[in-house]
Every structure is written in C-alpha cells, then in structure tokens.
Image (cartoon, rainbow, N blue to C red; front, top):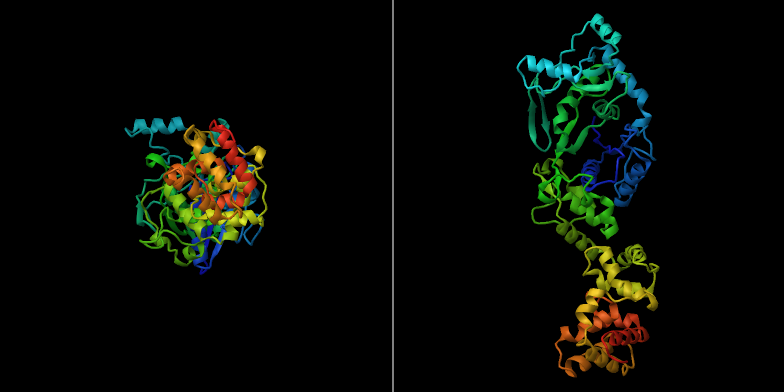
Length: 490
C-alpha cells in the first residue's frame, strides 16, 4: 500500500495523560507529513474499567489540541465501526478462521499444572506457559471438558526467531522460544487485547504503528499473529513499527496516568495553550533542530521524521514546558491573547468580554511576562473585580503594607490628588516627585506599597499603566484603604 495509515487507539479508562497525547501527536504528525490517514479508534472492551466520561474526555482532548482525525468516532470511515465494543462479530469470525486453520488451539492447562511441570523439569517455575497443549487430541480435549475445564485459545508461535526493523531502534530479534504461545481469547470466544488490537490494525489497513517502548515485548506476538491472519486471508501481514521512548517524571520514574502531573487537563486549566503544550510534547523524544526548541505545529509536520526520534527516555520538565508555552504566548496577536484570557478571568471570578476595551489595553501589559494564561488572569483580575470584592493578598500586605508604608502611601495620595489628567505619564511624574524626590526613597521602597495597594499583589502589570486603566477614583480609593490598613488616617 502506498498511503501511510497510522492509528491512535486509547482505552477510555481515565483522564488523558501527557504520555498518551505525545503518542497521538507523533502518529498525527507522521500521517500529516506523509499526507496519509490518521485513524482514531477506541478500545473499549473492558466493561468494568471503561467509562463514557473517559471517552468524552479523550474526544475533548483531541479537539482542544487540534489533532483532527480522518477516520474514527463521530466521523466514520470505510473501516468502521471504530469502537471495539461494536466489532465483536469481526473478532469472532477471525478467531474461527484461525482455529479452523490450525493457527490457534485450545489450551486447558492451569497455572498450577504449568508451574508443576517446570519444577519437575528443573526449570524456573515462573517461566510461564510451556506450550504443552499444542498437540492435544480430541479425546484429551473432551476429557478436560468432562472435568468442567474451560479452555483458552492460544496462538501457535512460529518455530523460528522473529526479527523486525524498528524505525527508531533498528533491527531487533526475539529468539525462538523466548515468547511462548499466548492467549487470544477465552473459552467462550471473548476476545482479549492481544487479538483485538493487531486484528483491528490489520482490518483497518494500518501501515505504521508508533507506540510506547513499554509495548516492545509484545511486538513478536503481534508479528506472529499478523502473519497468521494473513495466511487466513485477513490483512497484509506485519506493519512497520516504531517504539517511542518512555516519558518519565521525577526520579526517572515512568509517568503514569495515576500521577497528578500527567493529567492533560491540569495543563489546560493552568493556561497552557495548545500550540505551547504540543510544542513541548514534541520535544519528548524529537527535535526540529539541535539549536531550536520553539516551533509551530505546521513546522513540526513539515520536518517530522520518525527515524529521528530518540530511543532515550524523555523526562517531563515542567519548567521547560512553561518556558516553551511562554514563547507561544508572546507570539500571539494581542487581540488573540486577550480573547484566550477570558475564560481564565472567569475562573478568577470576573466576567469580561473579549472586546472589552480595558482588557484590550491591559492584556499586552502582561503578555510578555506570563508563562501560562492563569498567570496573566491573576495579574489582571484587580482591574475588573468590583471594589467590594477587591482583596489584598495577605502575604503581600504583610510584607509591604506595614507601618513603614503609611507615609509612603499618604504622600502618594496627596501627590496624585493634584494630577489633572489621569494619564500614565502624569501618574509617573507625580509618584516620582512625591516618593523618590520628596521622600528620598529608592524606587523599590517607593513603589512597592503603591503596587500592592493598587493590584493587591507584589507582581502586577506596569504600575503607571495599571493605574491609568483602573481610573482616578478607584486608584485613590484603594490607596486610601491601604493607608488605613497601614495604621494611618486618610
């Protein structure tokens, strides 16, 4: 086949995590680079663990990030259905064909019997299944059935080494006997993941499988099954594999979906933008150039080559992720940046529209100094919160608005009351004259209390511009309140 076809096939068993989305991104980029097809499939055959909430969260994640799929849920396609729970007849048919062809056999050995045979032969009792049931006669099978035993269906592994070329790791060989015959289905025909996953890939004409290196040990089993499926008229045989490096967290421990820092939506809630987060996830195993970390999704697609993915473990570095995101925030058009701030301001308890003139003027003041959108929203909240809801940050007030601040704030009020035109320039001139020249203070000592009085925080947009946007009345009211908080009288 000439068309590249890749798939992303998560199980709906929890919140999407960054390692999962990194896999989706690399598959998506590989398909887009080759003008191929990105197939999205849901592996939802575990009724006890799967949930509709998780399914909807996966859809939400892909939509938010802009990782559009060509075939899959809600889009359909020629190889549907794209949820495994709706494909049981296909699994039953394939299993029947494999059994009839002798590729798969019934196995009745219990775990205890397998362990006992290993001990009797002087082998490690934990070696696993020993292929002992390969050649059971019909009489033996019937005897087990009479005992009430339920079989499992195992694939007959080939009597040879299995070698394949990984697009990232090069040639890999699994020696004959290293992988025992494995279970594809229970005795009642219920299919298991080792059957459904590669079978669906075969039926959907997948050409390349990009997946985590933790699944590398199962690749010889997949290859053997794909060869067997091809012999019974299903699929085109093994695919090309690329095993992506693991993503680790603190202490080089694998980042699992149970780790709080792996939750994809944690980063959306903090105010990562899709462009920034995807850029950073791309760096977990790949780079566009040795001297360049910041790039667009279009640039990634144009340059992506799976053979250039590193085989080394990739550690998730939050500080670097934030720095990459900050670069993407700075690159946004100011109006776009302001628009994206609106939901984060809402999370801060203030309602403001994207076309609010104050927001349009204020957003550029924090765009250069924000790592995530929630940072910017916190810095701008003071401009939009009703005066009765305005609060000083307790730590900032304790550090900055003590008794020493009272004369500073009082002088600031007196000077600002004389300002005729409430402009950034006039405010700056008044404060410098009152506090730096009049009181002989260094700028940090002079303007720190004023900043906290106006914004409630020690970190805010530029002070003079903030006061102009806040307005004369509100600025003087807040300064007066800070004078009283410092023990003075307005």
